[in-house]
Length: 234
Ligand code: TMP
Image (cartoon, rainbow, N blue to C red; front, side):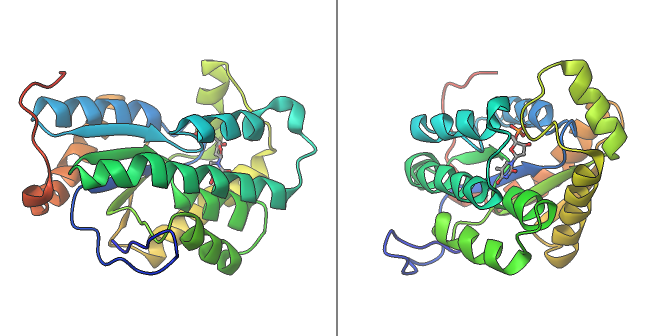
């Protein structure tokens, strides 16, 4: 993982912790799977921090409200992009880097790939400006592993409608979500070691089992750099 200080200068590879992001279109099941994985990892004694984007710190949660507010349908796409990035800058500085420094496994519900998929591809801002801005906002912090839960748009949106709380981005037309889905698949193709695509359509337990297998391998390789806690919630 590359990592830079506030001055944008590299401060060397991140030595501690493990950053795992979950990604996918609306209704792909990532939030449910993140909670299940957190529980499983805690039961094995790992220090686990669950967080999300936009959000994950007090200031970033305030930015989240602005971004997802149904009343803000007139938001300019560049304003939207910069707000996601602003939320990330605060989240990385205040929540993610301190947790990694403590040797935690940080499970993040969306991270920089969401900005690439939604703003870069979905809104058409373009891959290269978003890649540059992503690096700037996250001080070069990249996930060690990213799991994209892939589901067809019709299935994802139907799940979201059943769950009943639609936000500003959920209201976008189907073609937008299709572009986002294709965007995630492109990202995974380009960075196939870090980004793994799993089928999000099987029953929850089956998807969990596939995630656990994948995470086990990656976390075992990093064990020496991860903190174990004596008393842990199960
Ligand atoms: P959530 O529904 O997964 O909590 O995410 C909130 C919405 O924000 C979701 O529609 C995806 C969108 N989003 C972006 O458009 N760009 C980003 O960089 C992030 C993190 C999320």
